[in-house]
Length: 193
Image (tube, rainbow, N blue to C red; front, side, top):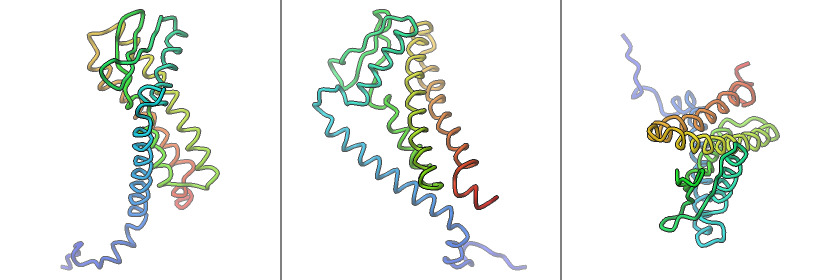
């Protein structure tokens, strides 16, 4: 009986067999690392700016507050005195901190890296990245506003709301966008049709 194992298959044959997987991984990691480095420079240069703690986190805080006002709650966002974050108050009650991780940029970087790794045509890829990033940003604002209302109305469920439900919303949204991309727009789909 002929036993074929990875040891018996030449490296070139393995590379050819898994070329698309290797290309995806290298492209994904390359884009992810490059965008993450750019983002870290952005955060470094944001230190000490007039937008506290950084422009996008500040913007998310202000827009979340406006969204909560739209939903009929009195909302306020204040600079946290002891750390680079914003304090979110709802009807005068301090509920949560809005930190840099709440601005959804790291999630958008993850989304973009995957889309580029499975790129389609330049035009479709660009449109999908822009529209998907805006959609993730909007869902993130809604997520923070609903989390604030949930914490206000049901403080006993803070752990479940903050650590399970609301990360599930944003990552679930990204996963759904990835599935749509792979099944409808990527070059991978065109190769298998």
